[in-house]
Length: 404
Image (cartoon, rainbow, N blue to C red; front, top):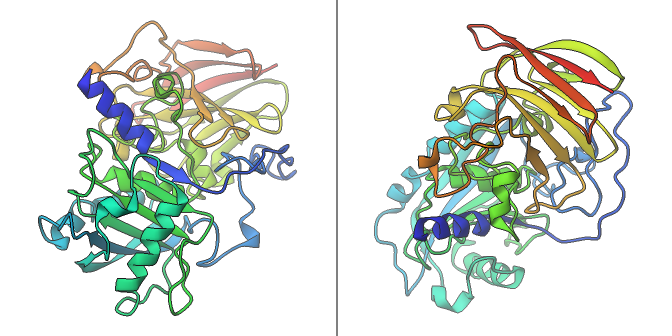
């Protein structure tokens, strides 16, 4: 029970924060890209495709997901929690691992460049003065960022960076197995430097997370525009949502890569690598594993302005090298569900069993979710029926899909 409780606190505390708005109807996708569902206005970090044309550069809501991403990495400690070891050692807990994770996940399309300031910045107030707890609010965050600038602005040039990482001394606050506090803030600026740089995309990492460096990969995923896939209000429900199949769900999970849907949204998968099914009928498709570059990566069936059904192949490679099971993974995407409420639901090919139960005290029922050769399924909400026909030695799957 203690292990299970720790896992729950870990996942719930690792969140993205943004300004909440009332949800409105989603605009239709562009005619040339009928499967690229638009982000639903007012939905926190919607799973739809955002309109990035209106806002670019350092003041954009999200950081660039292709090309070179420039991250400034800082280290802070407090009068009541002095750092127990060097900033260089803390930095080594995350780099070069995070850079390598993004290189593999993006097929080399995102070059993550972190510039560290390898010294501890002593905050002017004790940690206890900021009121930092699980799910802490905007006021506490802005107070910390403004205090950070008081002691760091003159010596550090914040200009030219797409996001800021703040690696907090791990002895500040409770241990990670009691309450993980890591958080990302995007969409609004908490403070402005003397030279006009905005602290508007900031990831803060607290404690020693059981996911290791992947907690920063997860948090930076929010800065790129990806939502939390777990259910923040009913965390046990995560085992019937995305489970361990995406780092934006359970960043300590066995399957450490991202869904093909996320990779497409981020520009790591091109439109030519997507089979978009908009008409009724039956067709056969060949899919290559999401973990390797090249080839077709997903069959996507939109069924309404805010919903799509997705098929992809997952293998034990790259960021999924510790995957529990391999095969054809199927899931529903909704663009009208907020981050932290479960916008992606994986279809479990084997709902009566779990697998790789060593991976956690719970959240194992979807570890054997992929479909294998000969298995089939009908998803009634989307009107999709599919059957896995074959698999090559190289891992390419052939699947027959019918849209009613």
